Structures are given as structure tokens and as C-alpha cells.
Image: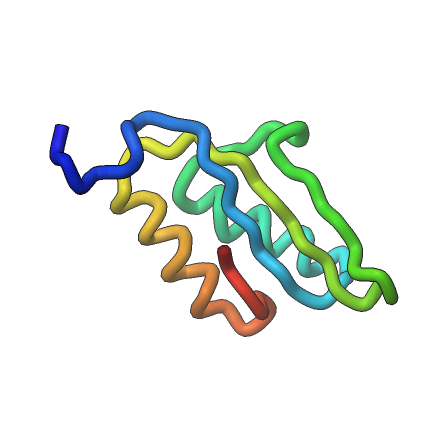
Length: 87
């Protein structure tokens, strides 16, 4: 193992996407991640509304296979106009 490598793959890794609350955003968030992971189980996804209910944080725990897979997820999510923040 490389001394600089922080993650050991495969591993469970939470990906958080934030956007405006809507059924469309939930579908977009799921689709963006499933492009890189395949179908997700419903229990791998949780969401939390902002205090005023206008924004939502969706956390998806993925079974990451590589750093490249995670980088691809973040690149695609960050580039999507509906995603305000990808963490």
C-alpha cells in the first residue's frame, strides 16, 4: 500500500450532494451516482432538509472500488447544474 493512500479499496464511502429540494433533484442525485456504481439500494440513500425546507442534502453511501471511481462521481456531480455542492 502506498503511504499516501488514505483509503483502502473497496470501501464504503459517503457521497453528499446538496441542491434545491424537489423530486427531480432526488432523481438527479441518484442517477449521477448510479452512472458510476450501478443500481443503488434504497437504504444506501438518506436525505436531510434544510431548516426552511428549500434545500436538501442527499448522502449516498457507495461501495467504492477505486479513487478514480470517486473522482469520476465528484467530477460529474460538480458539473451538474442542479448540484450546488458535492462533498
